[in-house]
Length: 269
Image (cartoon, rainbow, N blue to C red; front, side, top):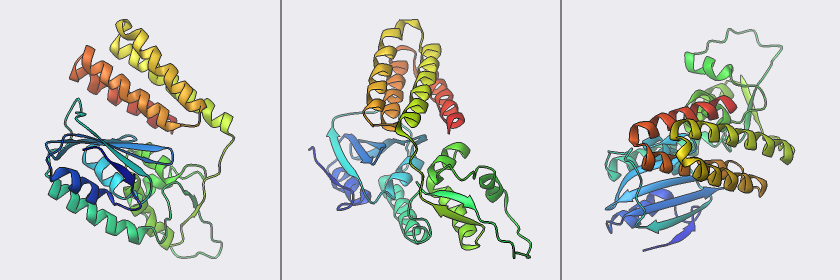
């Protein structure tokens, strides 16, 4: 069975149920604007997922709140590892709970692409007390980073960052603004630089024997960046590097590669 459709018309939990009841094996590809996520099923059970820097259960929960975008199921595709051990029922129950929470959060936070900025009030006299998580976010709020950007910087999901910010927005400590669209050439330049640094990491961990393969995927990513695919092109390159590492160097090296790439991306955010 191969099918595709709109997340606006068919929520992710319903999509998973449709495929899992038939015991199918394959890969869901979900796209929203420039973002892309993947969910792998084996015999109807979710076994692996990733979106951005999130993997496993957290990736499922992050994808569950997508209320727009497209999905496509490709049968027979299997992952190179398993990051999910919970049952579909438990995962979907938690995803549904988070979706309900997001409906509340979205009243104050329309999108995780909005940018938080500190709200100064001259007539504020009461003492403000922040918990450690709020202080952590305060140090990352610069008026330029989006909620999603901050999540990558502090290694939290966009959902968790939004939950923390919700109270700060309600308390009028923080306000949101739409993300300023920078000059495309400047943004592409940063992505090319990021892709080049990730390529260097891949060459370090995989070795010279894979130089041609690494270069091929790097050039493909550059082409994608220049054609407007942005982070999507970088994500696809990373996936190919991980596949190559798994094939040539094994799981242990692949895990080290994945960890180092995450550090590079966090530093760049």
